[in-house]
Image (cartoon, rainbow, N blue to C red; front, side):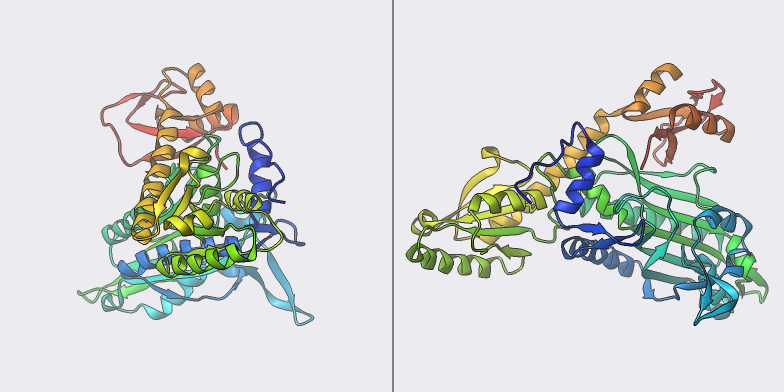
Length: 477
């Protein structure tokens, strides 16, 4: 399978992506329409993502908890905007144990409502605040058009839910978690992102403000890679989440929610992948190193494998895979691990045994350019340095691509050309009707309003009215 040529990334990006997910054994289609089976290689990548995020969450004072999969349907109806936003995507259970239920149960699309119900029970005083909880779970949203990892009926994610005494604390939490996502994306996944605020029409249903990190994929489309929402008092009022303040007065809490899902695996594939397959960022890769022994007979095999075992011992602090499969050639193995995107391949043959060296191949630089001979002594340090170099190389390459494909068109005609194959950084008047018309005419949406604003003012790219904020318009996944 690994020797079969992938569809061309440059000619058919969508099919390249679909085939790569399957052939690299990240995921497969489920017998349930729109769902996916995440295979061990893909799940290990997700576990590494989880570990990197979970560490950051705990460093910022959050603790993990678990809430039920089933939510009474009436809960969603308490927050009007929330139920309207999710209503078309709900999966509803009406029969349990062979009998019709007294009240239908919604399979969790997100947990704000049941969290709100419980927070109303737990929070009584300002001494109970803040509440900082994160969940690792799966949710169900009945998607009509699905794509593995990017948009599936059931997907895996984390969802953080916090409660605070004041507007200022809630806003600080919302922006802090946006920073956590951006730090993770850039320093773990080597994916450059734009941090910004969502427009009112693009914000989370029921939120006061929504923020996102947006990443540019290899076909120049945008991917919303993580979101953080200031829910204001909306859910607190709907679920009566109140506390006695220091003056003994009842106040409504201010709540937040924030999430990042397995769609980030799609981001890693589409940002870093090439014509040969995956290119895994070293800090998240399921295997950072694959060792391929090369020999022609039993005598060579014995000597080579003794050296391989010493090398494995040296590299015990890394995620290492030894490919000692029989019946396949080294060339097949090289292609197979290139497809799977392992950052470093270490080749050990009889000449390496004799000279005390190994041959190293970098996945981010296919061919001879990425190969070098390294001494076995001190190999662990050399590998560490190389993994860091690969991370920065991947990040710089992706950042250069994003910058090269982000334009500032001067008029609407040029804008339409830009958003067909790139991002447009433009002034926008803030009118939702203007935004909707652009979407109808170009299929481009406001990805976010970058937090880093140039200041000053200009004219809206579409209607020509005065504008005080620049936004990123793009087609998106």
